[in-house]
Length: 231
Image (cartoon, rainbow, N blue to C red; front, side, top):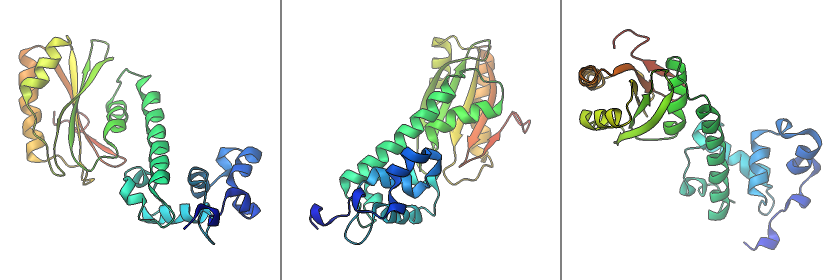
């Protein structure tokens, strides 16, 4: 279909002009579909960008968290979304994720399991596979560094205790927090999760380093070994 046949913003009905609505009433007045439509820019014959945006949201059951997980190929399943538009949408969603990460990283100090969860979640929240991260901290519980130790499949990842300790010693860390995500959403620790935590804790104690917690990250919630008193 030629571009000249597409519906541009100026051709939309007044109620489907999100740019004008944003200027007049601010960003909070726009629906999720209207915000996406601004990025999509043009619709197609007999279908506005707002209507195409609604179809994208239907694809993820109106869940913006799931929207952030879509690939370029996934987005192109919606009629009216080509590669260029899909890339624009994914880039905008990534900027939103990085903004959230920037706000979290300004804290730097970990005061409890919730702080650790929010910090690491920003790295792993959209992943369909497991990653194992370690936060290395000084005596004031301020983060010295965060390191991805390993990356695995949907159901697990391999962790080398020696690598974790090597980083801790090199960074002169006083304590560490272990963390990994469960893409399935099941927060209960597996037998392997419990066993590796014990091994890391034993190795850390030998070097006078404390393991403060092990956080398992789900979609919007987490499991804390320290809070459950099994650390």
